Image 1: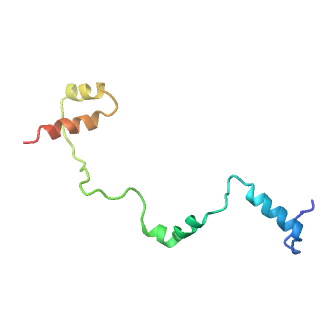
Image 2: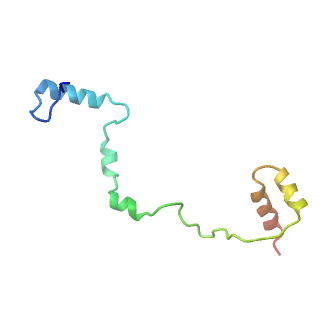
Image 3: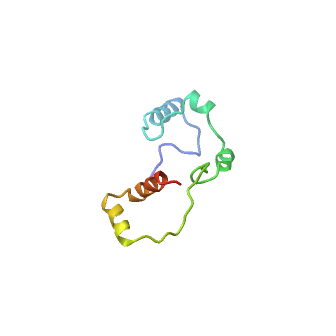
Length: 95
């Protein structure tokens, strides 16, 4: 199997133009714009940001609470977002 483009010899102008045309026509790897070059971040900067979600100012706290099974069943029957609705009810009942 012969390779049309070899690293063992320099490309001719026609071959270079052919390679550049193939690069430009690749939809999975478009050329970057000047705006993207200006706004780029280095790998080291990207790693400094850390992983996961940003910390919230008032994050929720996990607690264990014993409730009647009927109460839980009523909230669960109202849909998938039953925990958020339970939090809303508890927020409205603040003393």
